[in-house]
Structures are given as structure tokens and as C-alpha cells.
Image (cartoon, rainbow, N blue to C red; front, side):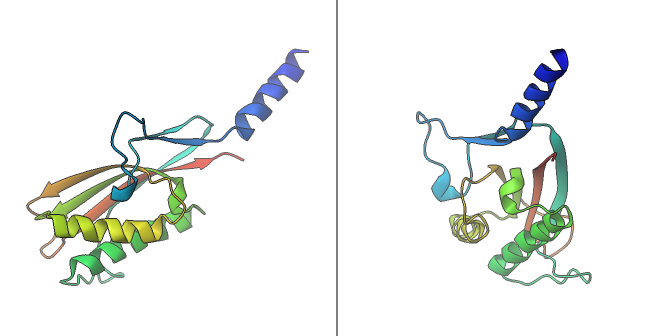
Length: 152
């Protein structure tokens, strides 16, 4: 009997939805800004911590002067890391965005570009931090992420 109950519990745990995104109705709607107020994981699995990805292209880390292009490359770099774990953007639970000399125009660009990646919302939880400088001259954006991979 104990074994049957344990098996049933395991099946329920693994069949439960692993990820939850919440936007309490008493808070503003964050979807137009490309994030959710909170995210959680309730099923056993693997957390994947992705280091800050810049807008540097390829192994040469070529940096465009365009904030939009650097944003696109940073997001592509995040997707490359996700691909190495067989994950998708929807597996990301939390992102942190560092933007040099942040402005409303850069925020608008970020929102446009993240909406292209997260076509199937909800967005992950997110924090944007304006900074005066990043690790290398010419870097305008850096994005790190925490993703979740459910055990099968």
C-alpha cells in the first residue's frame, strides 16, 4: 500500500505543471514591459544559471554600435545556451538586464526585442538595472537568466 501511494504521489508530482507565473491583479500589468511579477517552480528538476550574455557576436565578441543589434545578439546568445540544454525561452524563470545609460528609448527597444523571443507569453520575472559601464568598452547590454528543466 505504501508503495502504491508513493507511486501515485510521484506521478502527480511529475505531471503537475512545473512552472507558474503570477501577476497579482492589484499590481500593474507587466506584460507590455516584457516580464511577470513572479515565477516559481514546483516540480523536481534542474535549475540552469546562465551567465550574463552581452551583445557581442560570435567567438570574436564583435560589438555593434547599435543598441538594438546588441540586444538581439544578447538574446540570441541566451537562446544558444538554452539550446545546449534542450530548453526554450519559455523555460526561463528570471532574467536580469543591465543597460548602459538606460533611457526610455532603450527600454522601448528592449520591449520590442523580448516580445519577439517570448511569442508565447508569460514573460519571466525580470529586473532591469541601469549601469554606467559594463565589463568591456562598447558593451551596451548584458542579460543573465535562470531557467528550469523539469525531470522526466
